[in-house]
Amino acid sequence: MAMSSDLQWRYWAVAALGFAAVLWVLGDVLLPFVTGAAIAYFLNPLVTKLTLAGLPRALSVTVLMLAMIGIVILAGLLVIPSVIAQAVQFTQTAPDLLERLQQFVTARFPNMQGVEEALQNSLVAMGETIRERGAALAQGVWRSVSGVVSVLIFMVITPVVAFYLLLDWPRVVKGADDLLPRQHAPVIRDLAGQIDRSIAGFVRGQVTVCLILAAYYATALGLVGLQFGLAIGVVAGLISFVPYIGAIIGGVLAIGVALWQFWGAPGSIGAVVVIFAIGQILEGNILVPRIVGNSVRLHPVWLLFAISAFGMLFGFTGMLIAVPLAASVGVLVRFGLSQYLASSLYQAPGPAQPLNEDDRL
Image (cartoon, rainbow, N blue to C red; front, side, top):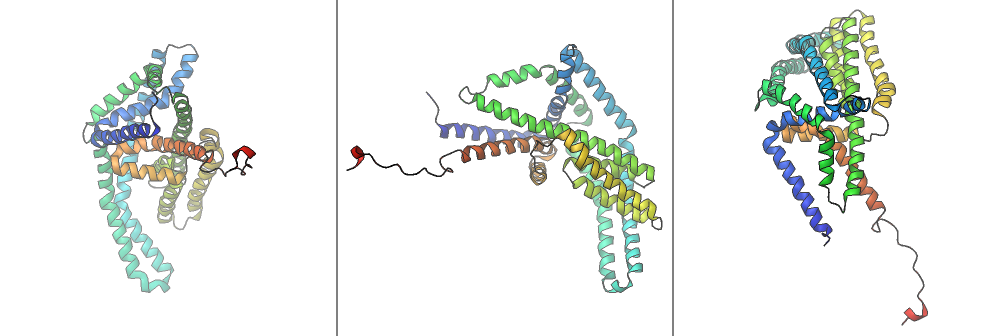
C-alpha cells in the first residue's frame, strides 16, 4: 500500500527535526566526527584515483592520511605559531596604529577641527575594543573547539574517523543507497548526485583556492616587508571561502598597516594595493573558473547567511556543516521550483474545448 504524500512529508519533517535536535544537544561532541567525515569526503576522490591506478584501497588511504598528517604537523610547527604571534601583536598594536591615523587625519585636514574630538574618541574606543576583544575572540574560538573534548582527543579522533570512513566509503554509500525508499530512490539518487557535485565543486575547489590565496598573500606581503603581513595574508586567503570578503577585509587591514608603516614611501603602499589587485584578478579570472568551475550555483549572500545562522545556532560544528547544508538546500529549492514550473498550478490552462452534442444538456 502506497504511503500518502502528506504522511511522507511528516516523516521527512520529523527526521529533519531529529537531526537538528541531535546537532543542538551533541554539537561539541560531534565536532571531531564531523571534521573527520569532512576530511574523508575531501580526500575520497584522491583515494579513488589511486585505487584505479592499481593501489589497494587500504594502502591508498594510509598514504594519503600520513601525507595529510605530515602537512598538518609541518604547518603547526612552522606557520601557525607565527600567524598567532603576529595576530596577537596586531591586537596589541591596533590602538597605537589608530592613534597615529587620527594624528595624520587632523594634521593634514585642519578644517576638521570640529570633529577632531569625536574622531579621536571613536578611534581610541575602536583600538581598545580590538585590544580587549581580539584575544577574547581567539580564546573563544579555541574553547569552542576544545570545550568538551580536549585538543589531544580531538587530534586523535579526527584522523581515526577520517581513516575508517575513507576505508569503508564504498560500503557506506551502498548502505545508504539500500536504505532509500524504493518509490523515490531514482529521484533521491539524482538529487544526491547534484548535491554531491555542488558540494564537491564548491568545497573542494574553494578550499584549494583559499590555500593558494593564503600562500600568495602571505608570501607577497612578506616580500614587501609589511608588518603583520603573514597573519594578514593567511587570514585574507582563508576567509576568501566567502567570495569578496577575504579581499575586502585583508585589503583594508593591509592598506591600513601600510599607510601607518610606509607613510612617505608611496611605492611600498602602492605595492600592497597591487598585491591585492593581482590577487583579485587571479581569484576571479583564473583560480575560481578553473578550480571551482562555473557550474556551482552557491550565491555568496546565501553562503554568508548559512554560515552565520548555523554558527550562531550550533557553534563551530554548525559552521562546518553550513556549506554542505547550504548547497543541499540550494539543490532542493531548484528541484522544487522545477516541479512547480512544470505543475498545473503554474502552467496556464489550455483553451476550452467545445462540447460535443452528447455532452450538451
